[in-house]
Length: 264
Length: 202
Image (spheres, each protein chain N blue to C red):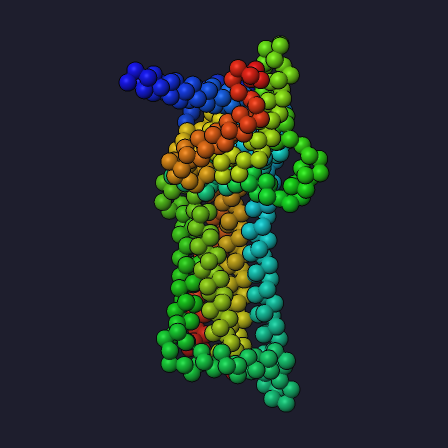
């Protein structure tokens, strides 16, 4: 009996010793690895990093401030080219013997399967659906633009004008919904629309609206990074806001009249 | 730029969320404070992933630049520290997987954590201790990444288990198991090499 107990004790001692040994090794591993990991970045890293961040901040702001108007101006230029091209065709539209190349292209476009489906399909996703998207896009672009314009003219002074810059992604989203749906509608009724001078006027007005929008965006951006600069009080901001209101008013009027006033 | 470090004073008492707000409103010194606060943690996370201080320096800078660019995306669901360290960890992993970097390390045959100093041994055990540290570096490198990463991150003493669980995207229980598993493997291999207390141990 005694012997078995002493044997058990010996076993326990062995287990204890093994455990102790494991603990010691573990502790030494932890100590060494902790030392490996107790490194700090060299002090030269901080000033370099802070300088890069300041540089990045200026660069990205300048880039953003430049990209938006540039993008708007390119879009406006494209719209103007289309409007000008169509207007040129008006000069030859009464000469059936020599229809302009653009008119021929538009006629071909309106005979494609997609254009015919838009015109003839009874599906709600056909003409009515696309017209709905066009109106929805218009509401986003003009609705948000007018909200910004009236703020710049002094309405709701409690809202920081610079914060309205956050509306621009929605405006551009609406613009592209409008552009794509407009292109589809134009495919469906191209030659007829192109014959109407109101269409060219509408395109030119939309181009001007995009320019005004881009300029306002740039000014809001400047205001955001120079918070002490009360840009909304300046004459320039009010001029842009009035111009934007007038342009969108005229563009909507031209677009609506297009449905009721027919060209020659 | 040193002025930013010298003039910490009152800003060092501002909480992270407010510093982020200030940085978003164009206050560069607010982001400087975040860099000073979490620079070491980000650096150590990168060291844990890459085992090289030079790589870690690059990754740390890269992560802070990215965090600055994406600051408006920080929603505050997690702490700024966790958000930053998740970015750092992802950047570090991307660098670790870069084939060009792997090739460079293969050719140069540099040890994992080779620039990391170990604890100072007593004079009579210098050689043994250095040898043991060298073996330990080699064994750590040989560990599978899923065990090595949490083990080294935990050893850096910069993160709680919850933070590590967020950064590595593993449950806390699994994390603890992996850390103890890594330690067990290291212990067994060291003992097999003859490093046992009372023998060659320093």
